[in-house]
Length: 305
Image (cartoon, rainbow, N blue to C red; front, side, top):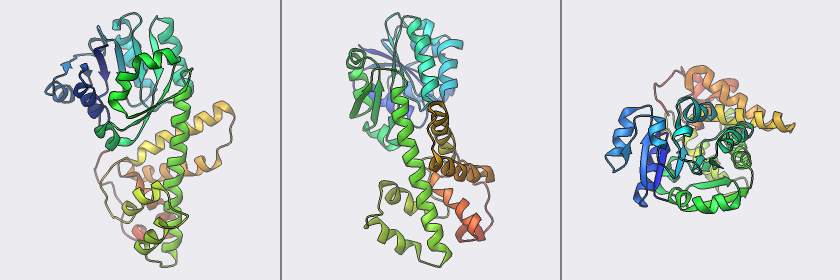
């Protein structure tokens, strides 16, 4: 397998495509932003003028788009699936609702192509370093055939199930835990701020205690900054926790903590702060409690994630 089509050259897709190039794959890249296509071409990829052109002649087509609707658009409306050779594979790596993934897979497989449900975790840092965790769901033989492609983008490739939708479910669980952890760190800090505890000292104590978590150590310091750099935007968790709640509805699983966390991210976005770093969900707690940054005017920074 040598030719990989790649659709979606955003903050994660671009470094993932670069890593495929570095591993010796011929990459045909497409994005609605022409400058992104040109940037990838400068690294040795074949520039594609459309989704269909990215898929033409490819052994595998990677979709690193924003959501299931964009995946559907690229595959069916824009002709990528029709251009993909019979027997080749679609690898969906975006975070999408499990039900939507299963529906896409059924249509792809009915057209004589393979489908791998393979969402990722690790963020932009992991995408750049090639250290993503990849949660692949497809028949074992299909995953093994595509393992070299997956391993070029992530050093932890897990076969989580035989059916498309199972990978999306694992990613959904991951995002549930991440979103709730971020929100509860903000809630804890807001309580301490209410009684005047120094949050820098609190962070140091909690980071070395049984209450510590990866999210506390990563997001906690940025919660104490007025305008931190953006590694993942508030609106990402508005979307992803929405997917969590959709999965809960589909399976009739009660997810009360996820619902509350989603409301806090939604409130932050609703004030015009959706493009800020997701650590800034703490602003919603400050606004509720009259503490910290809520004492100052809060406006849109104009930053994008």
